[in-house]
Length: 138
Picture (cartoon, rainbow, N blue to C red):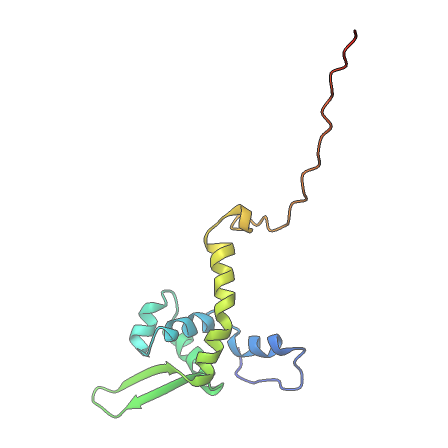
């Protein structure tokens, strides 16, 4: 999980974007910060299951990529707030269609939509079965 970017080694734009948002928690952090500015503790509570160490590392990587802004206030006790930069807002907007796809195809669990049962293939059109026509013997 290094913050080292690999310019020149990208195959496409999606590859480059995934280098920025790759990791278990980064997209969810972006989602939470898209709701508004959060202090560290509030962000941790909004993401059940994330450890303090991992959240700190992911926030630092997003900050280094210019996606997240960290505002530190000189108060006692110290206060730190996280928000999205303009690049972060643009990234969240780019992820919105992906979120809509996940909501429609995974969250609703509808088999017709390729939901939770993993049946995501398109069924062929039904083949008409010939119906026998009664023959009159007159």
